[in-house]
Image 1 (spheres, rainbow, N blue to C red):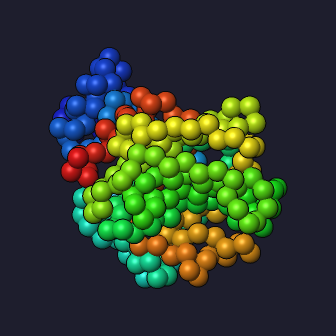
Image 2 (cartoon, helix red, strand yellow):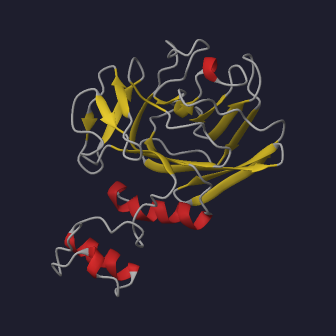
Image 3 (spheres, rainbow, N blue to C red):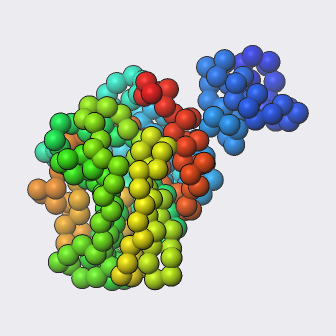
Length: 273
C-alpha cells in the first residue's frame, strides 16, 4: 500500500480527500499520483503497457516485462536504455527492435498511445501487430507509422498479401528531434472502422475506413516496434527503422478525447512539454 510522504498516511485512509488533492499531494511528495486520481495515467483496459522509465518494466539485459500482463518481451540488436528524464531506447535502424507476444485476440475497439522521437526525414514504423501466418485472414494486421514527411499514418489489411486496404494520414508534419505523444483510437462502425489520430492529446483528424472490419490476428501475434513483419512471420531484414521510444500503451477500449488528453497531461512534464 502506497504511503503519502507528506501526511504519512496510506492512500486508502485518504478517502475524504478529492482525487485532485491526492494528485497534488503526490506531486509535492515526488511520487506518482494514486491510480485513478487526476494526473495519473489511465490503467483500466490496458493490454500492453511499456515504460522504460519504470524499473518494474525494464532494468537491464535483453528482456523486459510488460506492466499490464507480465508477458516477457525481447530487446533485439544492441538496444540499451538512454537518458534520465525521459529514459528511452534508441533504435539504430540496422538490427534493433522490441517485441512481445500478445495477451489475446485484438479487439476492433482499441487505443494505441506511444511517446516517440523521430529523426530528420526518417520514416518510422512506430508499432505493428500481425504475424501474417496466424491471422484468420491471411496476412492481415495493422501498422502505425510516420512517413518521411512526418505525417501520421494508420494502415491495416483485411485481405491476402499484396496490398494495403486502408491508410489514414493526418496531423503532420511531426517535427524531427522532438518528443511527441501519438495516439490512435479505433472503433467499429458496421463493417467499417473509425480511426481518430491525436498528437499531444489534441485530435489531428479522423476517418471512416471502408471495406471490412480488420482481422487483428490471434493470441500468438506479437507487438513489434522498430521493424515490420515479413510474410512468413519473421522480422523483415529491410524493415528496421531508427527512432527513440520511451513509453507505449495499448488499450482494449476506445479512450475518449478527454481520456487521451488526460494521459498526455499526466506525462508531458517528463518530456519538457
